[in-house]
View 1: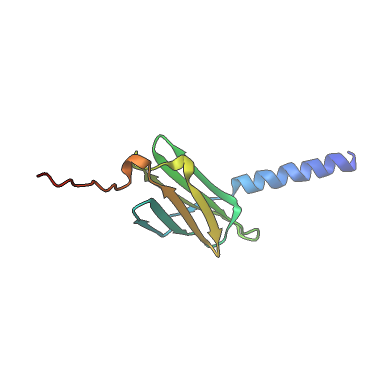
View 2: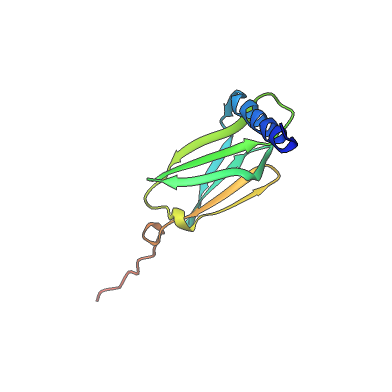
Length: 124
């Protein structure tokens, strides 16, 4: 067996071990608040790097998944949570940032959902 074949076999064996590790799913703590213009979601995701974070909106459901980076652990740990969004939220225009283990997701309201002033006329 050549050295290259041995390395390939070791890589495959390592991938199989990683896939066989039990997965521990945790629910992150989340704060949600609303302003006149947007919905803000803040999630505590300690141990998650930007590369291990996935945010997806499909059929009005926001899915948050984050994989914790821990090479020496025998378990694969991740965060998972879903939220149903109002049709008044413009998820396509959302903005997310991860800093110090806290994800801040800003989802603007659609123009139709924003409060508007109505002028009142004085009739004589």
